[in-house]
Image 1 (cartoon, helix red, strand yellow):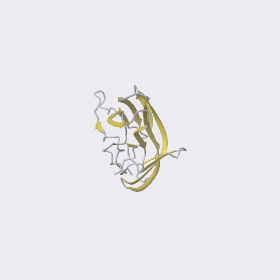
Image 2 (cartoon, rainbow, N blue to C red; image 1 turned 90 degrees about the horizontal axis):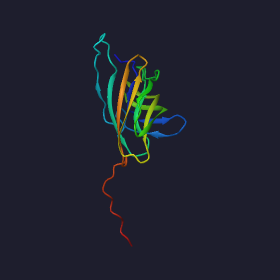
Image 3 (tube, rainbow, N blue to C red; image 1 turned 180 degrees about the horizontal axis):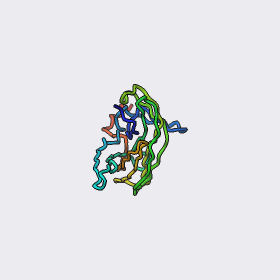
Length: 175
């Protein structure tokens, strides 16, 4: 049936940061444009046969010195209500920037069996140093309420503009 585990996704029709009025939007059930789908690998430890933490590889990209969303962490129960949020711990900080976690509300439609929902969540942002251009990496441990643990390695490509630039439109006729 449906699992009660917390899910960590880059979803959401709408993210509203608590007390700030900031909003970000993307298509429901798809990662934000700057995120690539995660690649998961899981192995068993050789002593006692217990599962080691699941390793999730993610990547994001964005402009220098601006907040780049690198993760959304929430817990949706089978009845479409929120469960306990996961515990987040930074294992390896980024070398050329900072990571901040903000609490917000995540609204989505057509997510699993839920036609519409709004639940609290944690949203992770990376911001590079002012003059940095290149790749950075952060590792975050996510402990779910049911006891499962994930280690997320997030590679962030920094530089340029987050908005794609295309050919310039022709200027109007000068009179």
